[in-house]
Image (cartoon, rainbow over all chains, first blue to last red; front, top):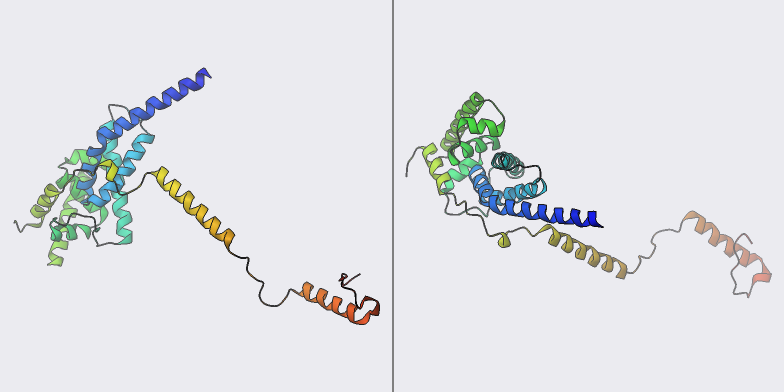
Amino acid sequence: MADQTVTMRWRRTSETDADALVRRTRCHIFHIAVKVTGSRDLAEDVTQDVCLRLTKNAHKVSTENTAAWIRKTTVRRCLSALREKANISPSKPTTADDPTQDIAVRDTLFRLRPEARTLLGLALGLGYSYEEIAEILEVPVGTVASRLHAAKQAFRNAWEEAK
Amino acid sequence: MSQDPIERLVTFYGDLDTTPLPQHSRRRAPESLIGLATGIAAAITLVQLASYPSPEPTGPLPLAAQVQAAGLYVRRQHTPALEGHTEVLPWHA
């Protein structure tokens, strides 16, 4: 009986900790997700998913690596969400996106491949350095530089085609 | 507004509203609520199914049933002792 009480108390404490962690980091997760996806609608889904994962894995995520874990997990979920969306409707923004956005830029962005969009969001939206992006995507820094250059070129090409 | 597409893209990212919606106004319902709704829907479906009358058999009778019916008919036609009886005997009796 005593063991059960201790276990229940430990669970309550863990859940409280996890909830507090999610509350503290939710805005940060959403910020990353919006910048990477360029869509509030997709970012809501990603944030919800990452928060759920954070709650489940709170005991594994130490204080030191929480920020890195959140950044990497959020970007990966963004990439997955963009890929899933690309399979459903490759060139259509979601209806819940902000209507005051620069429509021409948004439409051009939505025509790019998910990998290119993610890179542009990380570099231009969030202002991460090549080293930070390399760490998140687990690729060499040189690869980040070349892929980012290609992504910018793809955006320019799509922009010209849309004119 | 700048005509350089990359500059416009940077401006686009800068203008994005990254303020999350309050948690209570999220579009998706909590999982517990989804589970409850699913349970209620399943219960309603079961009740509806239970209230439907069982369907009448359509089409020809199975062969065994046809043979059995024919046997009863023959026995009743050719066995005078059975005439007038309301009790139906098995065809093989």
